[in-house]
Length: 213
Ligand SMILES: [Zn+2]
Image 1 (cartoon, rainbow, N blue to C red):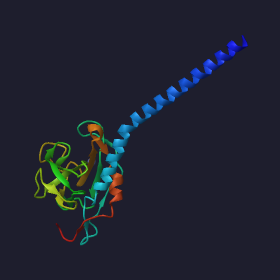
Image 2: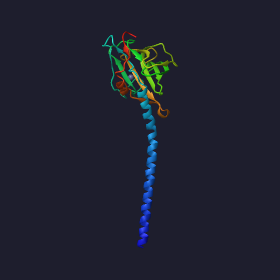
Image 3: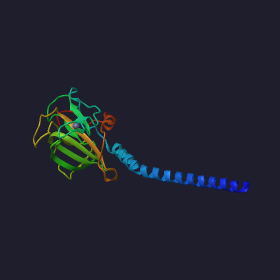
Image 4: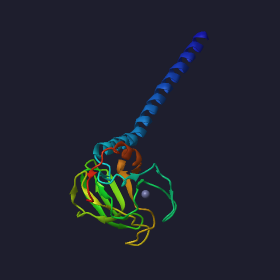
């Protein structure tokens, strides 16, 4: 009888041990599975830091009053065209004059989008070498570039304006500013990234502008 109980105990212990091993294995597997998308996301985020070279608005050395300012308005509420979160950073002009501040490309890349969007106004889209999409919106006018053109970081894309929030040509619905959006595509899914910290990171890397460019 005692031997039987002893065997039973041993059996139960062995079974418990097996269950433990099995669950540990399963846990490990599901963890590495769920880490994969995050790994791809973090690698792509890393790619943004690698690609950015310049702040998108130059510094006016001839007139230090022509500054810009921005704050972390990530996902702040926007109501035009339905309630939504703000997917980007607005870089506001100290002087509210359209066509005054040049916009330069933050990265090398290829122009993939140009033209009017109801919300974005005159916008330009650049894909950087690591496949990050940079969206510059509400422009007043464009530099001499077309879809398919290659650009270098620091090249002028156009001039800051207040276009958008209506049919093509609409201006004056808000103050002059650049809306900057940054998008990555982990697992083929469009994901917007908060540009605020990237702008802070390159705040001191501005193209110098001596006269009106
Ligand atoms: Zn905006």
